[in-house]
Image (tube, rainbow, N blue to C red; front, side, top):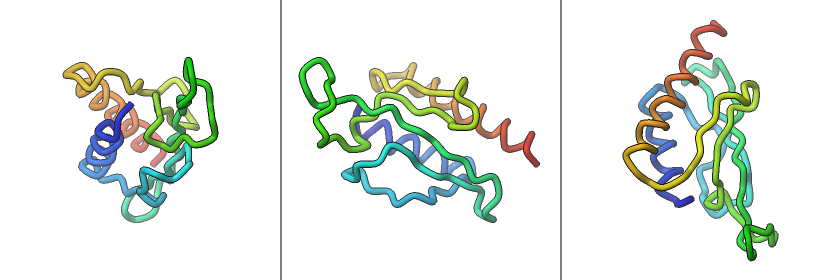
Length: 109
């Protein structure tokens, strides 16, 4: 997982009219973001799975959100994205993730 994955996720969310409610600080030891529509509707929690800095991915306690290896919509855990290789496939996967997130928003209105 790299900072590039998170930056692209943030850009894609903003392009789809989602606002990040959680402070965007990549060095913060957090494992979630709250997002909402600009008018405050549809508050949603994105939960990140954090990989460890230790041997074989062991958690050492100094991990930040940049250690995230996946992201899930808390209310809909079947909708998730894996932060694997930063490749064309990841670009396709993130677009699908955003599309599914936007579909949920329309269903909740």
